[in-house]
Structure formats: C-alpha cells, structure tokens
Length: 401
Image (cartoon, rainbow, N blue to C red):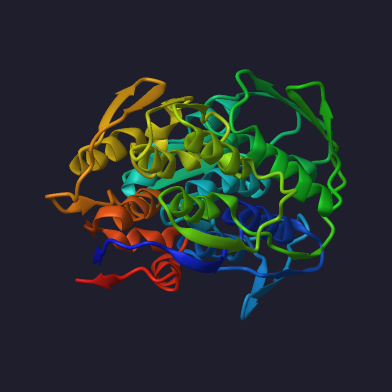
C-alpha cells in the first residue's frame, strides 16, 4: 500500500491503543493459567493475532467478543498429540521468542514465520538449551526438547524477549529456577513489565540483587481479569507530532506504567531544549521516531543503538537512508546514531517503509511537515492498524494511492 501524506499540523485528541507488550504477556499468562481469564481492552494487530493463534495451537481456548478476550487456560497440562504443534508466529519476534520455552514445556514445537523473522534468529536459546535440538529452515524453526528447571545465565544486551520467555515458562516446572542477567542489562523496562504482569497471575518471582531473578516452581498461574494498559511506544509518535508543532492530547496511558518507553516524554523535553544526547538501550522501539523528530532540531546523539539491526528491519540504517531523502544529515555507527542540524525539504523520491511498522509511522510523523509518499505503508498492521485513521482524526490529510 502506498500513501500520500500532505503537509499539515495535527490538532485534537487521540486514544492510544492498548500496549502490545502487555497484551502478549497477558495472553500467554492466561493460556498457562488453570481456569478462565478475561482480558479487556485488547486490540488485534498482526502480532497479537499471531500470539492468539499460537496459544490456541498449544491447547488454550480463546473467545473474542469486541475488545474482550476470554481465555480458557491449559493449566500446565501436557497436550497429547501426534508430532509437534505448528505455531504460526507470522512476523512477530515477540511471539517466537516468548513461545519457544512455553512450547518446550510439552516437548517443543514447529515455529512458522517469515524469512526475515527466522533470519533474526534464536541463538540465545540454542546456547541456553544445549540439551534441545534446533533446526532452522527458510520459513520455520523446529525445536525438540523439554524445558528443565535450573540456573540460567542470559546475556542482557541482545533482546529482553529471551529473558521474558524464560520467566514465563519456568514457573510451570516442578522445581525452582534462577535467571541471571549478564550485564549490560538493556531493555530492563520490558523485563520489569513481565514480572509485574506475572505477579498478577500469582507467579512468584523475586529479584535477587540487580541482575538475578528467583522463580518459584510448582506455583503455576491463576486466572485473572485485567485491562490492557495503553501503549507508550505508540504514544511516542503523537508526542512527536507535538514536537513538530502539533497540539495533540493523548489519552489512555498509565502515568505510573513500568513500560520503559514512557521515557519518551523526558527525551522530547530535552530535544526541545536543544542539542540532545540520549541512551536508547532501554527503549530501542523509540529510535525511529526519535531519529525523525531530531532531524528538525539542533542536533542529537543517540547511543545504545546496536540492537536496532535485529528488529523488523535494520532500523538505524534504513531510517538514515529514508531521512536523507528529506535532506537530513545522519551518521550511523556500530552503537551510535548522530543527527546533525540540516535544512530539510520535501522528499524528491518515494519513501520506503522497509516492511517495518515503526519505520512507516516514524516517517509519517516527519512527512506532516513537508508532505511525502510512503510505499509499503501496510506494515502498520503489525502493531497499529488504525494509525492512519487516528492521524486523519487529528486533521491530517492522508490518502491511499
């Protein structure tokens, strides 16, 4: 899908969709619970639909009624079946990485996905679970093996999703476990979110010092009734519109949320004051929109960007490529992105979304200042299908070509 965004200024109110990060974790906790959970305020992006498909494949029963999802959990029961379950992860890295340890509670699974998803890899699990067999093909990863309780050491600078996957699964085992994070511990906020949500299900996880988590075995999950909180990573796009001159009020957020992306408010405030320096190690999903908005400022230096290469696209590289079409001056290094002050203009070329939802949305924010055409805009369906509709409701003119 190709969209044209006209130059304009955003005005009005927007209600932010529910947090994809929280929704994944609530769905998986509900699937593991013994009993029926009610999850309210759910939105059905491609990634969330992937997780729903996968928990159904593992044996949970799911009923969708409007924005409420009822989940009848499997309660830790091993589902008897011939062969391994097929788990369709689509292009959701969260779904894949969260589900591998869960599937290993019952011997493993066959994880289907796009070629890009498979290429992003699960090497951390291959090293952690050296007792299991991992077979990678073009569009799927097959895992055979049963998860064991024990002491796990996980690198903290690759992806917090591997840590979350372990924390989700280990409470279902008969014995206690310990998870040690090898510093630097990046994206800590996502792990804090995991622990907070699992504790709502009655899971016993205790932090031991700065880098260790004790996980009580045999406790399992109790069903819950919960509301999915608003998504701070999506709110960052609308706060970005305000940095560019808009007047948008954002509803649906928890000001006390443990979501790490809540830091966007602090970063934008620093951006308004002048030359910005920010470490994105704990909030990598903010990177695309911060790069885009920084192009209109007095210069910015972002560190902690190394892991952007293993997202839906190589985000630092592709954002630099697209923002240069506006005339931006951007330097990408191994773990740093520098944005220099520059005179921007309407792009003379069509922008590419690189099949990355956050790239499309970030480019859309900057496009409101100059006008632009973005190809591959359908990528927003991965996390925020109503993004362009919400932009239009703020008075912005966007049309499909």
